[in-house]
Amino acid sequence: MKNAIQFLPIKGLPMIAPGDDLGKLICEVLANEGEQPQDGDILAVAQKIVSKSEGRLINLAAIEPSPRAMEIAPIVAKDPRHVEVILRESREVIWVSPGIFVVETLQGYVCANAGVDRSNIAQPEGNPEDEWVCLLPVDSNASAARLRSRIKALTGAEVAVVINDTHGRPFRMGGVGVALGLAGFEGLADQRGQSDLFGYRLQATQTAVGDELASAASLIMGQASEATPAVLIRGLTYHTPEPDPGATSLVRPKDKDVFRYPPGSERWRNQG
View 1 (cartoon, rainbow, N blue to C red):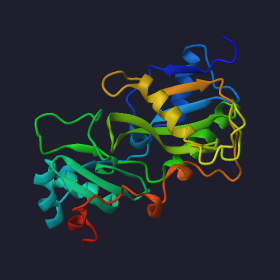
View 2 (view 1 turned 45 degrees about the horizontal axis):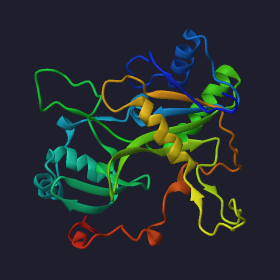
View 3 (view 1 turned 90 degrees about the vertical axis):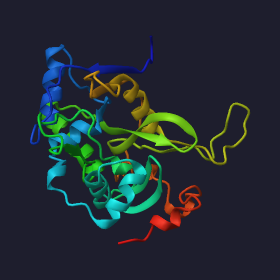
């Protein structure tokens, strides 16, 4: 179909370990399938494999939970050590209630558990106390930019990169993909001032293109044993901004977040 947008699953990547050259591995898998990145492609990559390649793994056996973590843990039904890691990865606690732990991460995202989880992490056998969890990249935009540069160095292709994760939403069931890091294209399309089909000038329309692509790619990647942590997106026309804002433009400013502090959340905020 002419002008169709394609989402090509990248299967066959090995289990990623700290220090792995993610760009090289992706290019090798594509080459094995007779494919390679092309100018204008967008590479969507799951946060988990980016974090693994960057060594963002921590063993809970090495964590001593703080009194605050001990207080929160039974409410959110988590290991106190896990809660301690979440606190260390957070700027601010937003909400604590049974089974719900929402924070602002060090990177500035508001999400559950600071993105710290243990899914798709190989665990040692025989000692349940010896558990590993995965953290978000230190700077997802920088991670996306490095991966973009690596693809360019290996293939010569100018691609954009989306690093995506799955987040919940306040008023909808289920998680959707969101863009944690972007490089090479504008994640927020501002259409204010443009005209609709009938000449009406748009007043407030801003489209989260980065999140929409992340969500579409997440549908292909899956959440369980699909083993498809990367997707090549082809056929979408986009603008490459200079300077590149990354995914920062998608984060709602704190003073405009009218749902940030639910009633009762004061208890958990501004504690040491």
